Length: 160
Image (tube, rainbow, N blue to C red; front, side, top):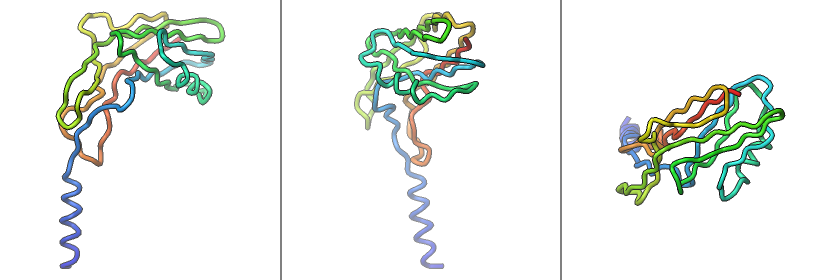
């Protein structure tokens, strides 16, 4: 029993500790969820992107199904990013609008975040249905180290 008390005490101290979420340690990205039956996505192109390599790799690994996500980079040079989606029988365009945030966060240094734009326009889309959800990439305050991880960021659901 005497040996069990220090172990419980140490484990409770470790469990009570928390960490600061500094957000993603890479470029910000938007998660695009496709919904549809016989969706045959041939290619995705992010206009003015430095590299298309990460997008191309995801398309190679893509499993065909009713719902599947693709992670697409968002531009930190402007408050909008445009993507061109080429399917077997058509081409669709999606432009998302957001507000970039560059700020100092103690314990992290300068961080990058994005949020809903100040204007009413959130997106332009040629898809039949589009929904966009904004969440922070950087969770405010401290987090339990057992539940550490960045916020969800921008999520988009499209239906061709």
